[in-house]
Length: 106
Image 1 (cartoon, helix red, strand yellow):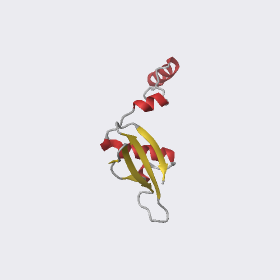
Image 2 (image 1 turned 90 degrees about the vertical axis):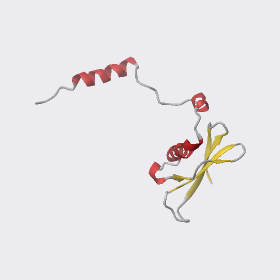
Image 3 (image 1 turned 180 degrees about the vertical axis):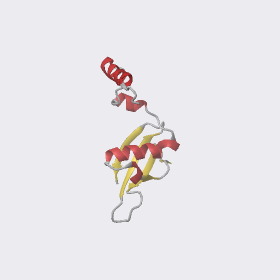
Image 4 (image 1 turned 45 degrees about the vertical axis):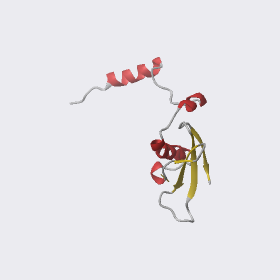
């Protein structure tokens, strides 16, 4: 017996046409309001590094966030299991209040 899926499809189309979907693009103002807890900084950094360096999150590893006087630094590398020849190292910066800053290769 076949089941009808038309009501679900019609609802999805209706939501799309009425603008009930969410726009996932963050603005600069949105990023200034994001605050990351120190314990969550490594995971946040992995996500940002994956996007910035076109890597899979599973291929990235980080150390815990370290206070550095003006905020926090998370050090990381990819691939997660690397040799001296193929490792790429990077840092993620956060303000003292947890606002994400720059990410850069070192």
